[in-house]
Amino acid sequence: MHLSEVQIHPTPLERFEPLIGPERAAKLYAAAELARRVLAGRVVFIVNSTAMGGGVAEMLQPLLAYSRGAGIDVRWLVIQGNEEFFRITKRVHNHFHGDAGDGGPLGASERATYEAVLRDNALEFAALLSPRDVVLLHDPQTAGLIPLLRRSGAVVVWRSHVGTELWNDYVRSAWSFIRPYIEEAEAVILTRSAYAPDWLRRYVVIPPSIDPFSVKNAPMDERTVRSILYRVGILRGRPEVPAVFSHRDGTPGRIDHCADLLRAGPPPSADVPLIVQVSRWDRLKDMVGVMHGFARRAAALGNAHLALVGPNVSGVSDDPEGALVLDECTAAWRALPHAIRQRIQLVCLPMLDRDENAAIVNALQRHAAVVVQKSLAEGFGLTVAEAMWKSRPVIGSAVGGIEEQLVEGESGLLIAPPTDLDGFGAALERLISDRAFAERLGQNAHQRVLEFFLGSRHLIQYGELFARLEHPLVAPESAAAP
Ligand code: UDP
Image (cartoon, rainbow, N blue to C red; front, side, top):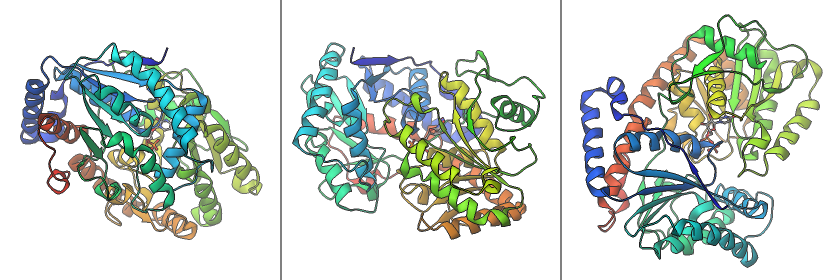
């Protein structure tokens, strides 16, 4: 079995209207109408490499649900690969961010493995495809499908969620690896124009977005927030109300699984300021750097605690490095003095039910006194947008998409360079000690997401792109995000 299909529950576009107002909603409905006309009788296949874990899966779920709600026959397929395939694609991913990854090569033998796995996937795909169907492939893992699927007469678009503006030989080697495939795509979508290689002449820029109604971002009252965190073991206390949430399809859900926790002593109580970074266990998220930055400044941070939070490492199938990075974090934590260790917990969240996982992340982000995303590279930080939406003060590194998401001193604080642990510690201290400033940043952050980073804007851009697909692509400057 090489391809799996993920279920999509239709969601009406009208949900956005109370948030974005009638004028923007009218634009959204017009884009949907246009897309329905252009895509009538065609299937839009969305393809990526995991149904769960990481930003792409997170974003696809609601966007596809709204597309279905808008009457588009959209289907979500997940490619399957072996361990060797995902080791290679993880290497490509790391190279895209300027990093050596596991240090291995991207040569002819890696290309052969990569292509063989995708050929198997394409064979199964061919049975589903009709000429003129649209295929939207996500990220380097799927790029090798482009020439194979175009042979079936499909319109194939490739979207990259990765990239960096800081070019080096690794970045160039990643682009060279996928260049022969993406040159055959009908359209290429990037998160920022700074990520485009100079040989890529035509592309469209569409920044990512979050869904304000998802389990991850939906409103949650304070008592439920605390009760969820008591229930999973991150905070000390007894649930005040049932630790429940609503699944994406509206059915009730309950937090049944606890987190895997590494901590010295009891959990902090709810009145202790909690600094939180939620990420995959990936070196580029620099969890160890966050730990060291906090540890250096711990004395000045009062009684604040730090929670470094990621998925249970067996839960993200396309990310083979997770367990290793978690081990590195554990070793770094063990090396800290006991008094500091008591204020830092490593948390692995249950991944058996992605809505349960999302509800816990929602509670954590809402409870956090400060949310951190100290990535060394980041195409776009969904966690940053999620925390901003929840009016949290965010500290992010001044890299990649985060630089455009946070306006320094207005809607968040930026760390430059991202390895500046003293700068990071000072930013933490500022937000923990000046709560009025932190509050102001949080309010502005919410407004910024409302304006630029909701799914409604994203859907309008997709609608417009699909309407243009069989015409020559526009030049990048006229395709920039609104
Ligand atoms: N995430 C999650 N559970 C976890 C860890 C991460 O739901 O245990 C989510 C997080 O909330 C965000 C996404 O995974 O929605 C990560 O996206 P981001 O763009 O920050 O980074 P990526 O993983 O795509 O590099």
